[in-house]
Amino acid sequence: MRSARWTIGSGLLPAALIGGAVAVTLAWRSRLPESLPNSGGVGDRPMVSTIGVDTLAGVLLGAALTVWLAGLLVFALARGLPGTGRHWLRLGAQVAVNGTAAAAGTVLLMTLAAALDAPTAADVRLSWGYFAALMGLPMVAAAVAGLLAYLLAGAAPPAAPGAGPPAPTRAAAGPDVPEPAVGPLLAAGADERLIWWELRALRPVLWTTGALALTGVLMVAVLVPLVGVVGWAGAAPMVSALAMLPFTRYRLVIDGEAVRVAVGPLRRRVPISAIAAAEPDHLAVQDWLLRSFLRGATAADVPLLPGPALALRLTDGSRRLVTCRDVPTAVAMVNTLRARLG
Image 1 (spheres, rainbow, N blue to C red):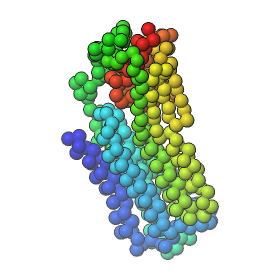
Image 2 (cartoon, helix red, strand yellow):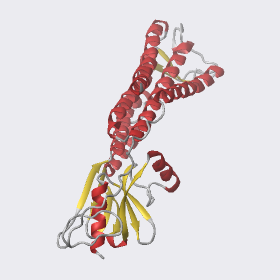
Image 3 (tube, rainbow, N blue to C red):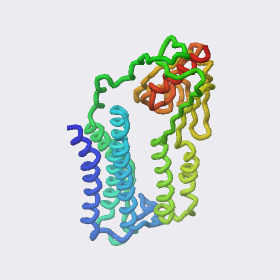
């Protein structure tokens, strides 16, 4: 049942919205002039410039189609996330796709309806009331389609039994390493050097970077020729995409000196001597969003991403959370290094 709702919300509903707009546009094409007013032509204001009917339809429907394809990509890539995170990411993409498709289709059909049977663009006149409706009704259509997409997604799936953070299990300690008060240890001799690291790509940042780069290309290739401005209009999203590239990689390193976290040029370091103990934790998506909103994404108790986390209890009584995939190994690593310091 859930798969059927996702299929309808992310596939059939946007296809119906975009396909319906295409079908009506093709049916009306013979009754439309070659161009429409692009500036002016409202009330008593004279027409200043025009835009081709095919160009307007291509821009609006092309934008809706691009957002739909991006939503399908997000839907596919969300498969690797936990159940709750996967649900909310797909829900957001589904609402955005259907809202965009409904708004673009409404703008297009309302604009074309006002030009039916007009010989030229100069004969197309919009009243101020119709112009106000043209500004407001697409928002209403987007809200209705977004609400329908939200209802189709349903509630988030319940957590599977035993899906919470794993309970710490006490492992056998090596003969040269004393056992700490809390948490497992690694079976390693005192003369062995221990180092552990984790590298991962930050997919949400990668998706955002790709979306910005694609927006810049579309602005240069599609919007700039229509508006008639220079090609610098697409520079801002492209520069933003380049600036975000260094932040697409995450690195966690644990050695005898400190726990180090790096995201591009940003660094965070917690000395082993300042750690009382390490333990596993798990931060749900809704809690992560709430903490990020209230305390900022760089707060000590807010990990980089929701999900499994390495919790560090510091000697000053504070607590820090670190994003980590292999939490049991990281916990044992930190506790072993802390135990070596006595």
